Length: 491
Image 1 (cartoon, one colour):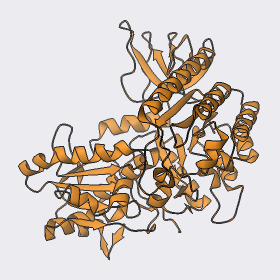
Image 2 (cartoon, one colour; image 1 turned 135 degrees about the horizontal axis):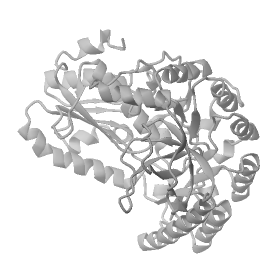
Image 3 (cartoon, one colour; image 1 turned 120 degrees about the vertical axis):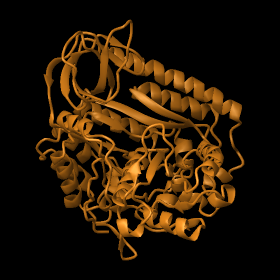
Image 4 (spheres, helix red, strand yellow; image 1 turned 45 degrees about the vertical axis):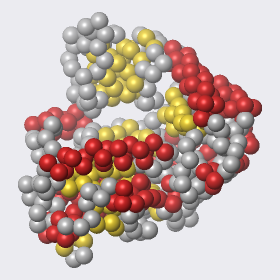
């Protein structure tokens, strides 16, 4: 049982039994994974998830601080909750995550009705902080500046029965001038390979058949124990786990992307041919000013090697538009790289200032109207290229792992949805055939391509009922949410 100040979680929160919670998550996959840990800690302390449509006794915001609108979104939602809290005596509000780590006491100054503020390094303290706030009737703010307990040692409520996030490291050693994450998540801390593989094995035994390895920079994994090939070795070791169907990872950094990782991907059957690698800019000048120590030719060379080793690979990316000092020529260089790279999708962002970052202090900020115009042009180009790349899939037979949800409906055609091995979204017509459960796997022939999805109107061939589908079905029969115990982790 996880302990805090000598108390186990249930002892720390005598008021928890019968109380309900809701966790609202903003941001990246790391935040989603953290929210699973927050829910696990709360459930272990006696809280239960609030039924849909009912007001929770405790509302937890797990926040993001990467984009400026994250601030506005959080404080706007906190404002909406103030009158709700007045009508529900005993209701409590907690704010955690990157925004909490950044703003600290400012959260309760702006929203004094918030009961608890906790940071990225002390997720496990939430139940105790809630109890202190309840007993003392005073807001509790606890922000640790360094990691105390690796999140993977905490219990978790997994959001999916057949997919799981597995953190291999937290923190980042880079100094990108636009990014606030290193100051909020700290320096990189790596888990030992055996602990990671033990967690994956445990998840597979519970029905999980796809894992995504998480880290701020996954391909520097091993820096703490001085093994430059640790990430490639980890990918290959995942290939030896029986029942593990699919392995993905996010996010790598181009400066650290090595050939051994490419070959590990290509030679390990359950490592998927999909790669998300942030470009950020196609201009060498802007990359230098961002402190991104690679150049466009290096980035394109990596993609060339990836596609030579895995011709079927789909590559996605992140791009920032309007970084301070970006000229028309710099932006055109980004457009040129996008044309050459042939991304299957891209997350494009308009640059926004983040307090405490060097880029925010620059005087050569690009006018908002210029940023917006460039953003629209880039988004249109990315969409056109993605559509062209998707059209190449028409006529191919692909393996789909089906997901939860109703699926797309067109002209009364009943469809289910899932992801191909390259992570493209596929909507599949049932055509009166057996309905797959989420987690089941089948083969389909692609009949139509749109910019952001594929369609298979010929139905499902070779449908395989999987342990992941069994695990999903078991969840539907039991109202109690399963709590997965954490894996003990050495710092």
